[in-house]
Image (cartoon, rainbow, N blue to C red; front, side, top):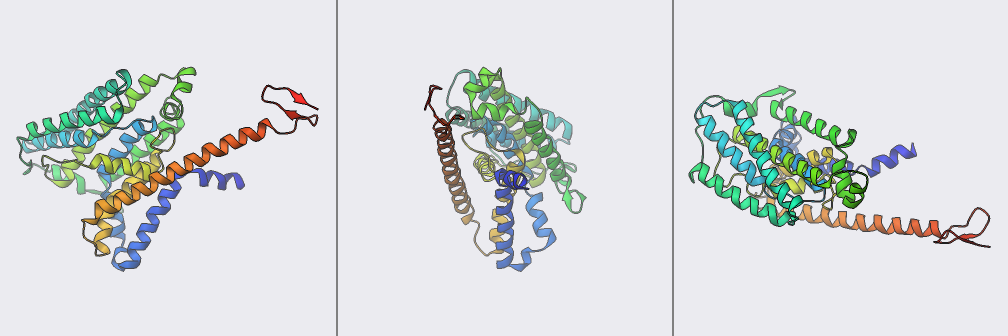
Length: 345
């Protein structure tokens, strides 16, 4: 029983789940109207785009890197999906183009960071600017709207118990991503590289290949999120997706994924995405203007990051203390173990 409880305490996503429950309880206590099935369910159904972005960038963060170009990638694929929808285009074609764009963006980011050795924040920030320019060109500087066909209906169709098909599919994707990163040897490479890149190399893990894969997955998820965005909201403006990269990063951090890499899982990222997408909705019920959205999000992010840094520092100190105690522990014959392996009587 002790081992089970210890495992629960070490599951960082549990804290994010409890935090989500606390937010729901606080909002509901201020405004009881929030405690309806539809209102609470909408917090999850509205998290489709954020969840896709958070899961995608989680692969990158787990390796100890960052990708701030996902918002622009999402905006580009959303704009292209909108253009295709205006021409009665196929949904499958939208997805194929989105995946292709995501792979290309991921390849460029991966090569810049892993091959050229450019800091990930700087390189992906540059990529973000380039893609933003392409979005402006693709959209002609105008909002893309007035879709033809039933493209906008897809995002609101429900499957079971009021859960939309989009979110149900996202849940399956989260489950598969979680199984990949926890149940397969190659999936565990992301955590291994983020935890100790040099050590991963010594045991035969390709750091270059792992980071390239992480960036491509991040790009693909961002691309698919763009299609979902265009479908759910029915229009795409030239700044679509701006700031979404920070929300996705915040979702990962809130979900227990360490920004330094090597720690976290996809379930936490998904829960963090629900928290991020729910903040603006909860503000409405407690009669606070939406202007507070960014402020509250920033406060939560700073709090979690500081807490994470303190926890890591404490973990390092505990590990050092443990090693020190092992070095000076009494030997089996009553002597003291020396660092060089010798003993004194």
